[in-house]
Image 1 (cartoon, one colour):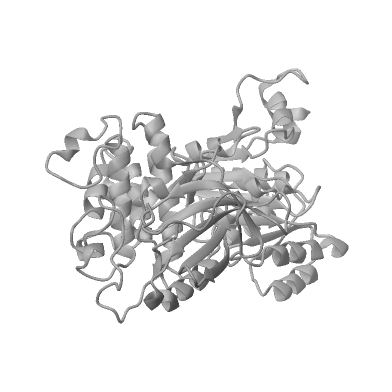
Image 2 (image 1 turned 180 degrees about the vertical axis):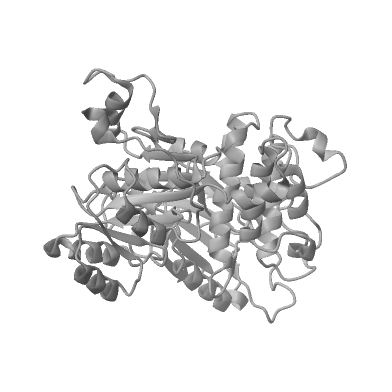
Amino acid sequence: MMNQPSRLEFGSIVGERYRIIRTLGLGGMSRVFMAEDLKLPGKHWAVKESIADPKIMKIVRTEAEMLISLSHPRLPRIVDFFEYPPSGAVYLVMDYIEGITLEAYMRGYQGYIPQEQIIPLALQVLDVLDYLHTRQLPVIYRDLKPANIMLTPEMEFKLIDFGIARSYKSELDQDTIKLGTVGFAAPEQYGTGQTDARSDLYSLGALLLYLCTGGKYSEWTAGVEGYIRGELPRHLIPIIRKLLRHHPEERFQSAEEVIEELRRSADFQSAQPGKSMSNASMDYAGTRVVAVLGVSSGSGATHTAIAVSHYLARRTHSVALVELHSTAKAFARLQEVVEGIPVGQASSSRRFEVDGVHYWRQTSRADVISLLGGSYRFIVLDLGNGQDNERLEEFLRADYPLVVGSGAEWRVQDITGLARSLQRHPQNKWNYCLPLASSEAVRRLRKELEHDKVFTLPFHSDPFEQDDEMDQVLDELFRGVITDTRKKRFGFLKRQH
């Protein structure tokens, strides 16, 4: 518990804005409360109260400013910071995330987390670590553990509690403050050196070992391999072992390096007999997610998602097209045509196949997480024109986000409006597609957005069919990502006739 008692209780108001409702958690240096926002009725926040040594208040303020600047779908937003000098207390106000911690989840399931969720979880953690570590001033989290990972009701992962995160300063030999959780903190956090990105990777190794041994171990000791669950992919053992090396220089050196190794190793283990390791590595680049978001109704998001999926399938095989909307009807209609189901009589299976593309109709985010742990080369998400938090987060975290907007002259500005509304999010990897737009509209939009990935999509009546003009556009969009191996076509219009 916090060494000094909190000055907060039910009904207390802090920052002249936040009314305390209840305690969410206690730690060695802090307490976290749920609070309601007096200026935004109905809005709840998590308020973290910490006691700061007056000697390090300048550091605390600097780090708070750093945390407020972060923006990532798997991080809670830090929206406010203030101090209470009489008691030495400082307060961080952040998103309140509904769900349970991974630690509580593990307790509830007797130390068991489904094996198919472990690698997707690791990749999600690595995604946010890569974001933190590759900022202009790298951010080191320093306390990665099950209690600081929140699982939402949809089994989405969120990293919480930035109480001891810090910016990496290359001129220092050691950290000013040695903090972390025993069993998950890297050796250098106990005073042997300065923490850096490799310290967080050590903690990731401890977390994976904890999950793989049913919560029994988080440190590598003799014989620990015997406690790793037998149904887990065995290629995880050398990866975890390398993450947990005592000396930082012997570990993986970046989150991206671990991502590549996880994906390469997973593919090598499932390679066909006689297929060499080098070929497996060359042919596999991990599961990539393409998210197609329509700016408005009727902009052509579903049509574009289908065209992209079949383009990818003709070249790379192993493509899933996911309708990320529980009440959408488009894929249900297509399934009726493909499987000859009477109109209005729904199939018992939500998955069906068209020319190598696996269609998943009316799908949830939890299903997407499980698909990421499978063997698909590409997962294409049809987000429709929905910009609710769920679909927007999937769009922002995708490897290839595609915005589809109307090509009509009077509607082109819809895209710039979307870009402005999301300007706090990085947009460098976004791609903009305008069906039937003029070359002048594309040129103008590229100038306004200061972005060269703006494309006009040609007339393409049947998205299942190969079309040379469409292929030229998609070749440019996916340049350097895929090889060209073409397969036969489906022909939706022909099938209806």
